[in-house]
Length: 408
Image 1 (tube, rainbow, N blue to C red):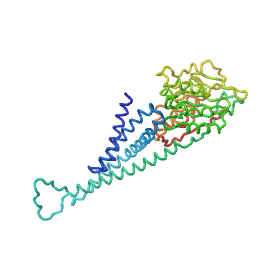
Image 2 (image 1 turned 120 degrees about the vertical axis):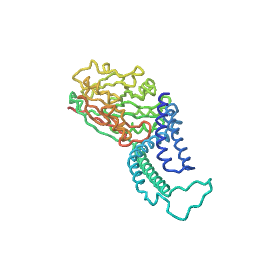
Image 3 (image 1 turned 180 degrees about the vertical axis):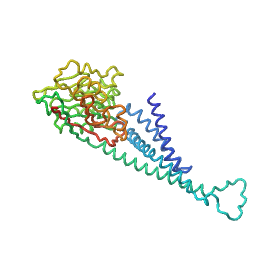
Image 4 (image 1 turned 180 degrees about the horizontal axis):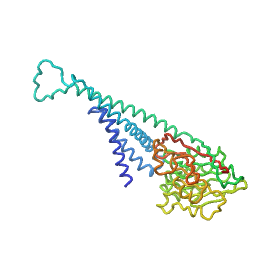
């Protein structure tokens, strides 16, 4: 209920602002203002319904709500951004317009004595009032048109990017404890697949095909596979059984697994041949060498008594072996570094998904995307292969990454 109330307040406030700039300022009282007002009310209701109801609907039904609702969410965001940027120049131009009304326009031209109108008749407005109103309408309509074209163009580009195939990234990471035999081992990393009402079985098949073409030694799926239950999305995840690699496929939970029923999904993944790492580790023996592969649960699991346990996953291991940790959120690297992890593989951020949200991610996470070092531990953050909410990615294309381990 709290989530729904917050969504309602935020959505109402944003649509009220859009109504001011796109409807009230651009129309005169009458039919077109009523049409615009009705349209924004309908879009606001659609958005609230999309954000609150798609999770409980079956994909076959939810898709009809998700597509228009989430596309409007993206368009609404970029309209809000464009109109917000235009606020200062709009106010400056309005002030200049007022200052440019000629003095002759402020008073009706002299002429014959005015007729005495019947008492019921309204007095005529000065000519300047009509001129200023026309200028205001022209400015408001021009601003709305430019904002609408810009927002539509950005969302169209972002939708094409999000719905296209994942970009293959190749990264080489030096590990100081990696022996010569294990050097060259290749790990395919994918995160944030987000199967749901929009992304289904075809999305999974494309990701599996992309990974298999890379011929990896190991596959790491670092959380947020689904946005729904096994009953609704089980068939969409089935192509994961076709993943091919030397040492198998491994999985750690993301926050969305805990929203969707983590336990049933972990059992389903085991059935599909994907190995969950639940605060545990396993030895990976590669060409005579060995490394530890560990995985910790996502921090969202704490609310369900299934949070990350770094001591359990990393305690008691041999210090001469390198350790690669799968952890959904980059923020978990702080704990990983304290325990001497060589490399952490993460996702969660989507690379920001909708620029300029990428500028806000560092307020919560130490790395937005790509390879970095935190307290001596390497961390690679995938932008993810899917999306959450709007089927739109701006400045953050989807990816699958091939990480090659080498001696450091």
